[in-house]
Amino acid sequence: MRLSHSYKLLLLFGILFFKFVSAQEHPKYVVVISIDGFRPEFYTDPSMPTPHLQEMYAKGVGAREVTGVFPSVTYPSHTTLITGVTPREHGVYYNTTIQEDGSPGNWVYDFKAIKSKTLWQAAKEKGLVTASVSWPVSVNAKYIDYNIPEFWSFENPRDRRGATSEKANPKGLFEEVVKNATGTLEINDYNLFSPIMDQNLARIAGYILRKYKPNLLTIHLPITDGAQHREGREGVLVRKAIAGADNAVGIIRDALQKAGIAEETTIIVTGDHGFVNVHTLVSPNSILVKNGLYKKREGRPKAFFFASGGAAFLHLGDPNDTKTLKEVEQLFSDLPFEVRSTFDMLHEDKIAERGGDPRVKLALTGKKGYGFANSAGYSFGRSAEGNFMSNYKGGGTHGHYPDFYDIATGFVGYGRGLMEQKTIEIMLLEDVAKIVSELLEIELNQGASYYHSALKEKK
Image (cartoon, rainbow, N blue to C red; front, side, top):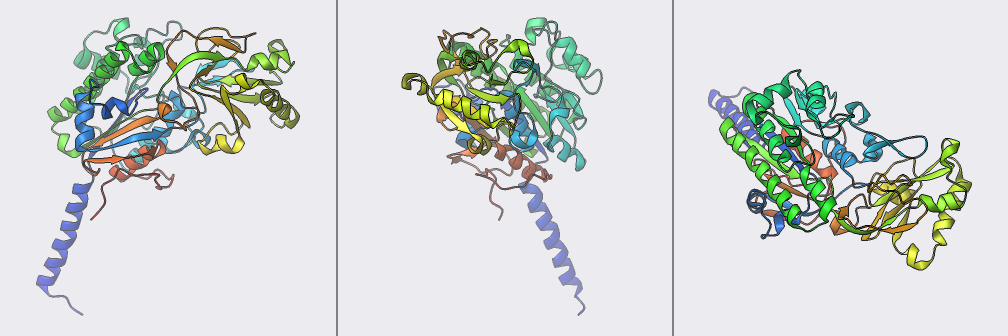
């Protein structure tokens, strides 16, 4: 059957119209902003000093709660944000490596530690331009075109400038953004002890957006985390920090306007974990020491707990040593009620549920008010060896099993392709990368099933 000329034109118009509508549903650019220690009340509570976040939440889509991964700490969580899978699959189980004696090793900063496909890789495979600013585990990430990674000097961790310059990609990018975006940076203008760090990172991201217009930009704002570690969930310092992060969001929004791409951009603001106020430290290795299972001077201990803030993970010298595993479990089960009630014991199936270290068959997670320390005192910078419980006169921590509100993080999405004036009750941290992949029409190869999606329904 031959088609008439007018019918062919009508069919062609229909195809073009479909493509136009489809293009209208997807943004050309996506900016993912992670605020460390980001809590839902930062945008749901009108009394918070966050006008940008509250405006985006009111006009766009936001979650009352985002369930994180286990442990709910920064580096595993950020790797989930960029891969859409839990630590069990992406391979970044803690913030640091674990040394032979059970103490923390180096921070996991190199991209090669990630075993799953990232949004950066997926974007590059489609021919998109990628950029990142201060994102954890992004050093040497070959899929990031413009990369200012999260890195620091091992000799002087307060000084991030030289180390960041060395690892920036392409070479000279750090000097370029300092010259054009921030001006000369003193040592305390660019570290975790500087309230202005978030704004300087935002200015760097804004410059990259204006000059290079990456299709995907990821940025990590860290200062809110440190404030809550010092003061807990509340306090003047915390309000100042979240106000600073909100200002950083504003700097990025302004840069998008100046770049002329605001209408084609979708912004997602999310985080890695919430926070729990802490009054007591628990040192589980003290129990192992008393029962002859943990002797540091004999190389790798027979058993040790590796603390990660609000949780502690049992590692065995021999992973197949079921006898020691059962012995440790019994020791902790037999503790007096007033002690035993300060934490929950988690077994392999529960650990796997939120993607915990597959080598671990037993973990402890603190109740509200309780955090954990290694025998070397890593978690809070002090030693708790010899004392199973000790008072902590500090602020807050995270790392707990993510099954209660305080440890949840947040999500706000604003722009093309996302729902408008919509509140989602609960999401999973894995949903974020899947949403970004849908928006940019890229393939993560991780499956696209959501616990709850923020995407606008297609007509």
